[in-house]
Amino acid sequence: MSFCCGASMIGTKGTLKHFRTHIHNVPILFCPVCNRVEIHHLVENEYEILAEYAHGDGAAEVDFQEYVEQEGKDLRENCVNHESEDPMDVVLSQIDISLDLLSFANQINDIAWQGELKKRLVILSSRRNKLKERRTSV
Image (cartoon, rainbow, N blue to C red; front, top):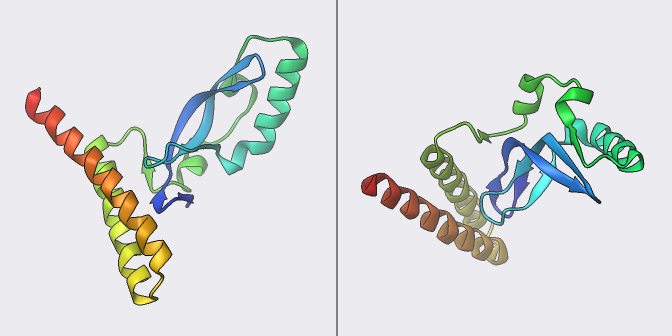
């Protein structure tokens, strides 16, 4: 599992820019709290090689899936949540994980970590409330 700032990162595919080249369908992980994005560790090397070749060739766009074969199942095994899940389920899962971590931080008396987790919970609670509002207004 990949974690960032008290939340587990969500697995998806996205478009990344390497100099002037857009590389589509790259397996990535992103943090629902701070929006940090990182390339999935199972394809980091392949991404770097493809990005350098595409940039060297002057390609404006490249589709990662056309050049790299990777089992989707292997990529998903490292993720607690996936973009295809219901957004409310993802946020609730993230809140649950953060509450578990906060409980542990309290047990070990880590004041700094408790503060970070409380900030994350405020952000996640805000996202949950926005999702609730959208559902009731639709």
